[in-house]
Image (spheres, rainbow, N blue to C red):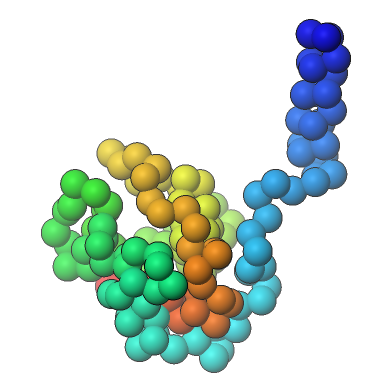
Length: 137
């Protein structure tokens, strides 16, 4: 039995490495976000209030530069988002940061961010939220 489990695990890992399946594919594809129609004002509302039983981003994140023991400050995010993950635009980095919060951790913080935003937001909401985050200088 031990050999069979190791064989199955090797098959799964091989499929993942070769792109045979994707366990990390979000329900909302990045390509489905229309940033030309995104509304930063609506995104700010999403940031500051609970949506569909998901906690408000402002519960843990400051936009004023004040540090929190829960989440990092997002002040200046617009300037650094595009350089945080090589080869990714600021929009794509923020997309992954919201939908897969453990993917890019800020030094000194743990992956305790609410992980179900993709189940609570729709594509236009996510685009709005990202548009707002890109206003944080």
